[in-house]
Length: 55
Image 1 (tube, rainbow, N blue to C red):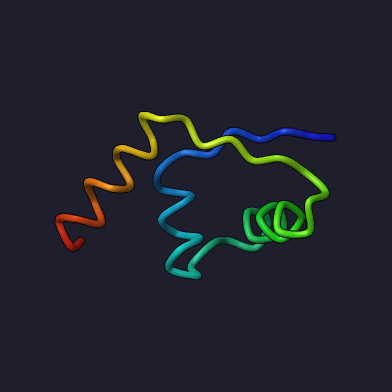
Image 2 (cartoon, rainbow, N blue to C red):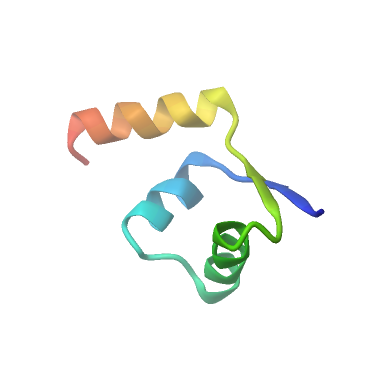
């Protein structure tokens, strides 16, 4: 199984449904459990900070 490491911008774009086509295809494969995505804890912290700040 392929594994990809994603950053905070990619995850926030996924949540906003605003990903480029290639990245969107990768996330769709992850939703189907064909690949694995890893979100590092530092990136998760950045996502939460951004969301709490309302940006």
